Structure formats: structure tokens, C-alpha cells
Image 1 (cartoon, rainbow, N blue to C red):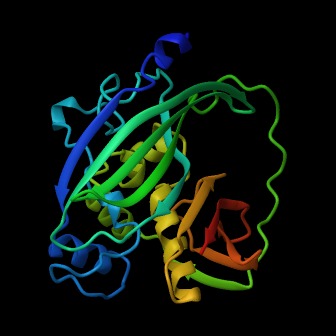
Image 2 (cartoon, rainbow, N blue to C red):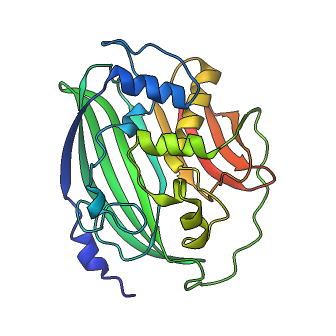
Image 3 (cartoon, rainbow, N blue to C red):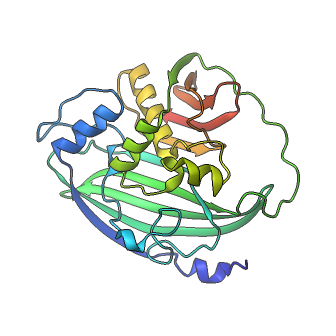
Length: 280
């Protein structure tokens, strides 16, 4: 299929404004999903990265595509490639959102680029998000979304054998069962079927199991960094390198570096799946 990159780039500059009240119930459900505890009464600070559960588009079920995502061509440009993933991003935390506040998120298409990878074509969409409450800046975020060719599509070469990930100075083991993935999909109103529909994930998109969300991994790494330092970071960046599935446990890894923490996830005997950096 042809890709009209000039047409896709005409989406650059489009904006979307959304609002949502951060309720105590959402905070309680978020903490329960991650087996954490914390206050949720109005006025108290909310957990780190809960903003990913807020101000998500509420597309009608009839408006969803076969993959469970909203049909393309609304706020995001209509990239014709079938596989969509969250490739990475950067968070800069200015203040914690508070329980009971109405959160405003302004989203803007910042860039659209087309590249050729070993597995075929890659179309990257960069979205800038600004979250605030009553004029108080909360989070500035860059979100990188990638669209890819289907499995077995055009390839520019043979991928090298993956290198086994190292072990960090600090390690925590996670069991990514289907309940965890379903709960996180529900929290973020994410209908993408690769996270909860095993026949679709394996039969249609060619994965060996359910795919662990990129934002879920990022949240686990940010929580790990916060636990190690005792305070949340001011800046957190991450990049997805390879998928992790629910077919086995994976680890969170952290090592001290330059005053911050280098972090990564990896399945047993697998390569680095997500790399991240936390700075204070």
C-alpha cells in the first residue's frame, strides 16, 4: 500500500482539548492494579503516571477498527500501516495532580515521519501533551507512536540475533498475567486487542502471546525508580525496543548512572524490551 507522507504531515499542528476529573475511585483502582497503597481523599497528591489514565478519547464501539483502536483519520492521521505501538516518550513533571481536580490535557500533533526499518516501513507520529489543573502546570509529555507493516511484510534485511539483557544493580520481577493487562487496558480505556484478546494477538498480529503495554512497563519502571530513591523523578524518558508478552515473567532493572537511574525491562534470557532514564 502507498503512503502519502505529505497528506499525513498535513495533520501537524492539529490540537485536541480534553478534560476529566481525577476521582478518588480512579486513584484507588490505579493503586490496586499495581498492588500499591496511598491516599485518595480530595486534595491529596495522586500517584505518578496516573495521568496516562486521564483524558483518553471515548470513541463509540461502532467507531472502532478491527484492532480495537478508534478508526483512523480523526485526531491522529490515517496511517494505513496495520500495527500500532507506543514507541516511547518523555515526561517532565511540574507538580502532582490532586484528587478531586479537573485535569485539562491539550494534545498537538508535533511531527510525522516515515522511515524504513529491517522489518519494513515505520511511520512515527509525535504528539505533544500538556496537562494542567486550574492553570497549574502538571506534566509536559512527548508521546511517540509507531505504525508498522504486518508480520512477513517487506524487509530490508535480516535482523541480527538479539543480545541478552544485562542484570541491573537492582532487580524486581513482574508476572504479567492477563488480569493485570486487562485491568490496565480498562484504566486507560485502551481497546487495542493485542493486550487482552489472545486469538487476535497470536493469529492476526503474529505475537506469541498477549503484549504488555508500553505505558504499563513505563509506569512500573517509574514506580521502581521512585521506590529506590524515595521521591519521584522530575524527568522520565523511555523507549520501546522489543515487545514483552504474558508468556513468562520479566524483570525491572535499575543501575545508578550520572546522578540518575538507567532502567530497563527484559524477559527471562531476552533482550532489553524497554529502556528508560529517571532524573531528579
